[in-house]
Amino acid sequence: MTQTVGYVDNGLIWVGLIVIYGLLVAIGGLIGYAKAKSKVSLISGLVSGLVLVIAAYMTSNGSPNGLTLATIVAVILLIVFSIRWSKTKALMPSGLMAILSLCAAIAFGIGKFLNS
Image (cartoon, rainbow, N blue to C red; front, side, top):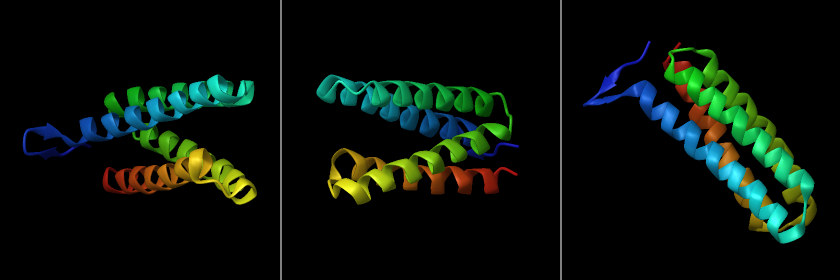
């Protein structure tokens, strides 16, 4: 069930946030490949971005599982980037992505809670 906030559909807000996060993840994978020739970054970034776009599509069609899927992806990426950040101690890129993934996981989890 979606609610209207002003003239904006609440579900549309979640779709937009999921798409933005997915694009940032995919772009991060492309940058990782361009800078370090890391095929792992390329594949994981594009696959994660694609799964997030699928989650956004599911959310746009009113499926409660879209936000669940987005939350799961954000938590997995939070774990992966937190481990990398603890090893490298470098804010860029793993620290930034860990923080972004934490924010996304919290936001999507709240969205799931509010829309259930």
